[in-house]
Amino acid sequence: MKLPVFLRLYRLGTRAFSPVARIFLARRRARGKEDAARIDERRGIPSVVRPEGVLVWMHGASVGETVSLLPLVERFIARGFSVLLTSGTVTSSRVMGQRLPEGAIHQFVPLDTPTFVARFLDHWAPDLALVTESEIWPNMVLAAHARDIPLVLVNARLSERSFRRWQYLPGFISALLERFDICLAQSDLDAERLRALGAPRVAVTGNMKFDVAPPPADHARMGALRRAIGRRPLWIAASTHDGEELAALSAHTALAGTLPELLTIIVPRHPERGQAVAAAAARQGLAVARRSESDADGNLTLPAPDTAIYVADTIGELGLFYRLCRVAFLGGSLVRHGGQNPIEPAKLDTALLHGPYVRNFADIYAAFDGEGGAREVRDAEDLAAALAGLLSDGEEQNRIAAAAARVTASLGGALERTLQTLEPYLMHVLLARGGLAGQGKARGKARGLRR
Image: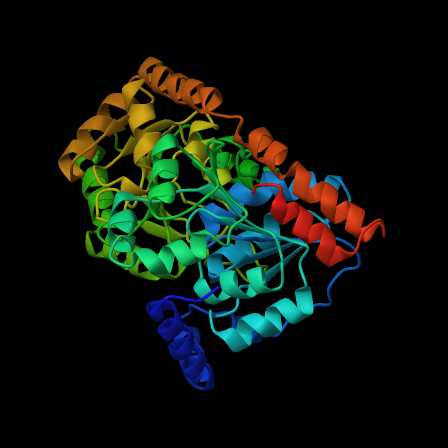
């Protein structure tokens, strides 16, 4: 199958990039964007051995995508498969270190060069590859297809902006999409866009993020926090980005006159920004504590009675703070980032607030807002007004939280539909491993299922 010109140029360019990848990775490591101890994984060099038997490889870009794959990981492990889960960010690797079940392995995905990808696939030799959302890396797709590894795009989504961009390179994207055995789209609109770009086999299975269990919480740590906070009013600004913390600080200051014991918890999306957030609070004269500042015994810092701003700059503890706070503002939405996933707090009885910029989760927020399960705020003043109302009205908190929970429950079921679609591929993999057919032949049958 002849590749389009731009795809051939991409392969040539990325092949030429391989020799200088060490410099690129070193610069990223200096900025905290790579794990120094595991940086070789980004060049396709494994850090652990491949497990025996059937191996299902799943890939997600970062935290949200990898978390959405956890229900699939658990189901496959329960059936006796081994699972390799890859991602590209340090934060996602740390979260997966806490949440992956036994029998699953995390590795960093290699940079998308022919050399690194070949090295990765030579070692892991997956029997089935599941790629989530829109993580379509050309060399990875081409190499997996050339090795006859069945490829499935799960929980697939394509934003309007990405769709418009791909329309400028129709041959490039269609050459990749046609190599997927099937694309399992989150919505009818996503399916239409995938078909328009050349995906020949598309089914709508829904959004698996609605089927993810609520994020966990350490009960001992939660108990310690409850004792430290007592009966103080509190709220959380979760997964905030640069600029949104100032809005949270402004809202806190506006409310402090009527709620002098108010505790504002800020969880920056990138924990390494904790020091900068704390410094901004201190400049405004607010008493601040950073959770990551451990004492001599390694205990995390707790808010003191006079702490106004508590910066929770740790990883994997959002489940704890959502359980403590009945009101949450979800970040990435007052700045043009595109919003953060509201499903997790919705499953934990939380009243949700968000800004206007939620294109990354537009359908989900529209459903929540339409049913009264979330409220939009436009700026710091609007945020302060919404908080003032909710913090003084427990019944309204309950109404919003209950509406969000209903929406979340009604939109579930994607996990089962996805598993049902994947079943023929899994059965042929099992047949191959059982010696009833040559593995290449079985993979060919699996690929033939959708033709």
